[in-house]
Length: 128
Image 1 (cartoon, rainbow, N blue to C red):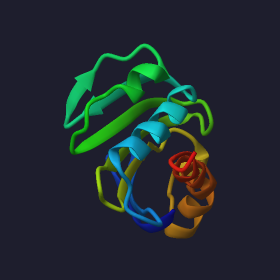
Image 2 (cartoon, rainbow, N blue to C red):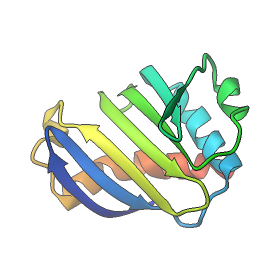
Image 3 (cartoon, one colour):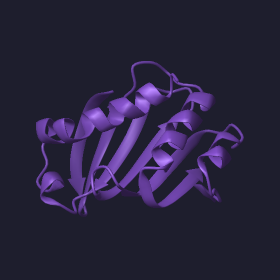
């Protein structure tokens, strides 16, 4: 994934990323299902509506829609993270709480370094 830009707002780093290719709903479900196990207090939303899931298999059964959100406390980066994936688009929105020093006073280069491998892994999961 390629970082388009990042800005700080109300204690959060708000960023826009670009996928290598447009992705299908099935690919989005694969990525969110993979990420699911790496979150605590995880919530899933489809078109801004909460979806009750108790396993990653539940995610794989979600009917096609416009977008899917996963949010909660990331076990990988130890901060609250919200990721929005859009059906048939290359745009991805990622919001990270400025909870620790790594994400406070973040600039483009620092944020890219912190998040790129995490998001590349998410994109690779779409192709499995």
